[in-house]
Image (cartoon, rainbow, N blue to C red; front, top):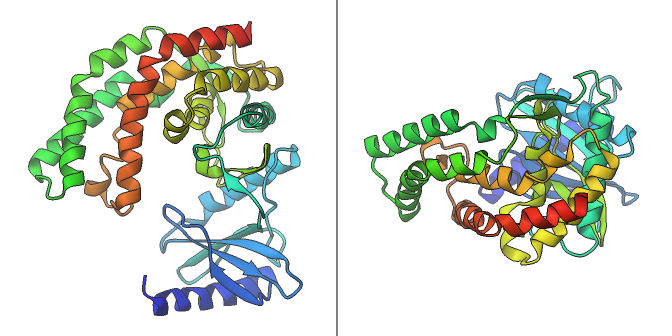
Length: 348
């Protein structure tokens, strides 16, 4: 974006902060980039800082409000969460004016993301935070944990159909960039490896616990301060998914798998800490967390579909993430026996 566009967006955000949230900032500066949002850091005269998230035009208010309320529910359950700032009307956590939709939470200072940074005591800290969150989500009106079909991320028929469609779309619209050519080739390779995914899934229970989850639990959405979880952020609206799928999505984030060679041992400690707080997820399912994550990565079309769907720019960062996901899937498969042995030892 050009400086003039950024300045115009900051001006609009400043007006909405004052009019809807009662915050008159001394400064508003661009914050960490979001996938589909523009984020800012607003600082009041007394030094109080707020994290301001603005959503694209056309964003529906209901889902954003539901996500914000789920985050507040987690905070009230003593999960480390950045506290929301309600609007001046006190009954809403989301404000909108024309095509600008906004939420405001306390800024979390001196924190770094868990993006590839799970080391030492952080493994247990993250396991405890997610275990506490899932345990308390089990009491939410959305419903308790219950066995059901395996998470859709490891639905073989669905994955095969999506990969076939992606390959067909790349054949219809031939790739024009190096990333697109790699993505098309990788999609075809994934489709050819569906028998490998089927063999992985043979070791996963057909019925697994599903429950209310965060919805987008990954390294960038967990903030660390030293060896402590400072905040879990960016909740999605209430949705039921596989508890083990969500746990693996964070613990075995591709950047962690590639950056931390001792990830099997860390994963074992994380799973044990999680299970101590949330024993509703059976041990036999937790032992499968690396297998579930490996299968999910192998079967995923994201972000190979990004150049065709235009949901986010296919820039260098997204390309690197795509390649990391592909490499991490291979590492998980290669070290699966080791990881599952460690998990059994820690969960015994």
